[in-house]
Image (cartoon, rainbow, N blue to C red; front, top):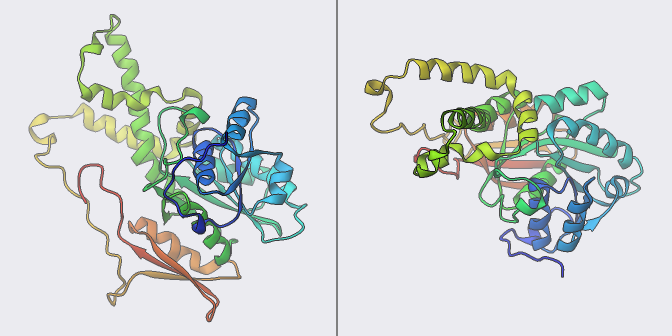
Length: 354
């Protein structure tokens, strides 16, 4: 019997009646199951026959890349980072057969963007054609296990989802991407590619690199297994060390340009660690971002609805560096604009700050 899990996203917020997912693992499976829970049809492509079988049992429609490109208005690209560019190239080719409807909007989910950008440059595949446009994206949600069985329709609820649109996307297409993400229960924010990779390295990749390294060290120091007597501290520190080795090797290699300087500085500080002054009495809370402009009004960005966002893109991407998330958006037909309004973060600081 098809799966219909309970989910909070409102079906009315869905950007389309049919969504495509390429790659039915942890992220793609969670997207698929979340949309199925709202009654949206989901077409799924995966090379793994078992993943396809499980997606079909949940209610999704197995299909080919060509048929997916013809049928859906939003497609989520969920392969490993190095294969995103080839998948996009194949999708562009397949989308050339679209006979009606708007351009296909494709969103990837890779946690490091330089390999994707370099991959597009290497293949010579454009960011946008007459039939499709590619918007980089990254959901800040996951878990240490992979595959369809680890997927969860509630995985993105309350999570931040980063959009990194190209200048070729129109305001209408960006609105469709926003709707697609918000339908999963996530909160949208925007970033520039280089800033995103620094952000991801500091907030995610360094923790994985540290956990993998420390896990190896613990294994070498504890051949008899007395670590099983430990409390929560060790388990919390090493939780992500069981993450998939192949996937995280690829992610950390792709993130090395930002990750290595952070690890070098971390190593320097650990070498010089002195408990008398390096253990803070109370971790500082980061500054709360100001979501207003110089005149005290809500921070807003206006984008053309039917034309590429172009010159306005810089102002949009700076909102992420300023610590802001998308609070509201609206189409303004009278001015032909997409109006985006920004607010302060909705997520709690990991150190306990607001």
